[in-house]
Image (tube, rainbow, N blue to C red; front, top):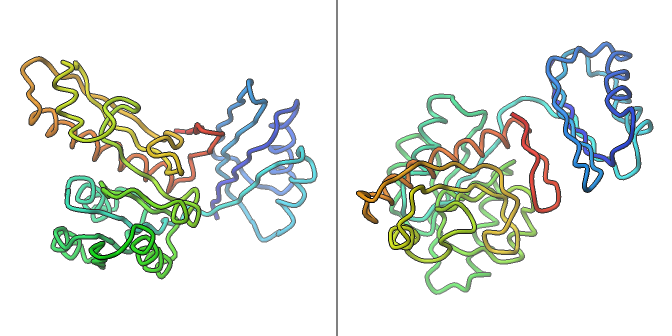
Length: 277
């Protein structure tokens, strides 16, 4: 059996030796190991892929006893993560994830799509994914978020992906699903926030455009960044061309962020992330 050990704790000497030593004692084979030390905040992070017999339930308890206080430990499987996608009208990010899901190219199971419009229903149904239309008309933001949240909880997802979901989430919603919501933003944050980002980029004569995937927090588009990418453009590209190229980057970055999360390669470190490849 294969599992992943996730370690996040205050840094001190000998941590790797303690962790790997106990793995050896329990006859757990280390297939792959990645570690990182945040020297400024004196925090240690390690992701360890293990193979062996995990029936001894005291492994984590023994390990925690050897590590510093304020230690976060998880031993997780490598099964597919359940994902609910929220969308509005734009199809590229939703379609990109659904296609990779269909191809079994991501370690996820898309269990549902929820939208405040019916526009993308044929796309989801085409991939045999349940589609739930929850209109925001005549509802306050809080009321609509509550209706969406109840539908999400029915599916008990591990990850909630905002596939160009063009609504600002309420504080209660964000707290309810803290650490689970991943958003894709149409620029290399913090540039060009707000309406018509590609028009803004065109007017500034940019030579590259990008996309940012990040965890959602109460501060709009300020959550810990997971993944970013850019492509180069020229003076020949107008706003429409930039938007078309930008959609391709958004789709790619969003899929990569979901894959990283589904493979347990992310640690939140304050307002940043540690990302193990």
